[in-house]
Image 1 (cartoon, one colour):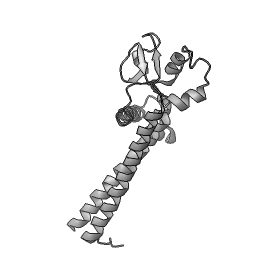
Image 2 (cartoon, rainbow, N blue to C red):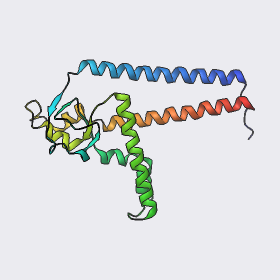
Image 3 (cartoon, rainbow, N blue to C red):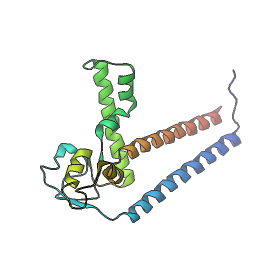
Image 4 (spheres, rainbow, N blue to C red):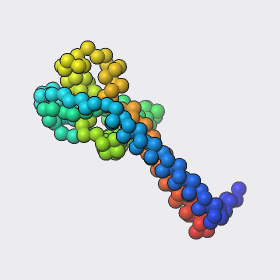
Length: 186
């Protein structure tokens, strides 16, 4: 089947529609983030170095007083990567070269997701979920709060996964733009 040629006008219109949709999506996301920040009061917890070891801090630095901490379940985030899903889907044996390569790529992707999300959401501190919950339970405000409620307020694992999915959509949009520009050269 022969490929349809796109006229320059059609390509320009497609690009304009794409950029309008992209800017609307980005503006709505920023509006939600700024409104969310206004509604919530700052949460400040005091922790010791023993309660918050460096290997449980994924973004930011240790401080005795942490303002607006957020947390993730690193295992869930890692399991959401295409590389880790390939390991499971193809039942690649642990210890093989292919397993370690895919696991390394999954780890790299997870680190990039964390970095990109924390920059976009303007987070200053991100740590392990269980570590944060233990620290929160030592405060009077969160001593009796159930995990489910703590997750709603502090856990951003699902938000990072959704952010990554949105980034993939934007990346595919960039491919769309390149494809549209490529048709102009024909």
